[in-house]
Image (cartoon, rainbow, N blue to C red; front, side, top):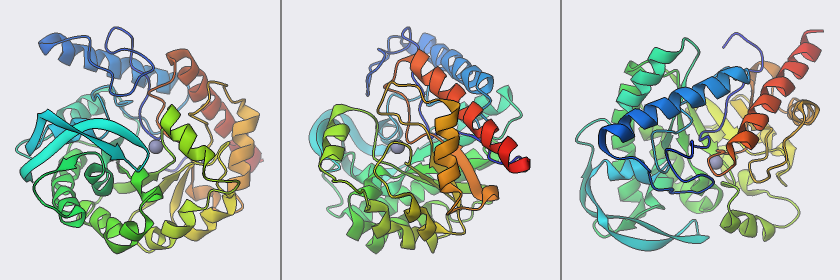
Length: 342
Ligand SMILES: [Zn+2]
């Protein structure tokens, strides 16, 4: 990016109410068959238009083509039984009904590549595509086959690498891996989590990002956050390892969170997508608030490496709120850009 402070979102945006039940995770589709395929693509175009209207520089599909950021990917793999689901505790926090791994996992065909090609055809702007990270995938299913989180993560990393390379060929500019579980399982992150992530990006020539957040603004997450105390220092345990990795960009949560902003110093040298939008509140930030959060981050990241973003995905928010937040992000970044060029 040659433009200073290029804006993007962490990932998901709300779906239209004719496509899926709004303000809900894992919301079931309201359409079927060809109508669903067409509906998802129409929603993608609307989501893209919302981002463009708000002045977002690096655009995405708003995750309109998937029901959930992890399970939709897993459900496309063989070796997975998603009919006889199992209830597991996700990130030690909440129970969810998830698919079961019952045999060797393989990717028989591309998962998101056609959708990425469709998005590419809609715009000349840089596009970012989000995939689940290997550790978060392992944490969002029931394993009845491998018996080792590390071994399964390695299998997923190999599969993700195949998908990422095809997304690159489809014209995606940044491939992002979502690893919210990095904020929970520190020992595993340092033992094999970052190594698995590096396996997933092996041989890629496009830029790569890892998104590590405190989750969507759903009750289980806000309850968990309430137990974390005054200062959220989770990043401190994992940033040194990420800093030493081949990942180009780190997407993190900042605005209204209790993350001490100086922890960004630990990833000095990386590009940083700083969350300047709170996704756990329906209050719409002012451009000044956004600029203020970004200004604080500038103490710890060089201006040419600062990428204004959202704390996490906005899928569970009302669409009008998400649109307002997108506009605030675009306007806040523009304010600071003006200030820096003065
Ligand atoms: Zn997130």
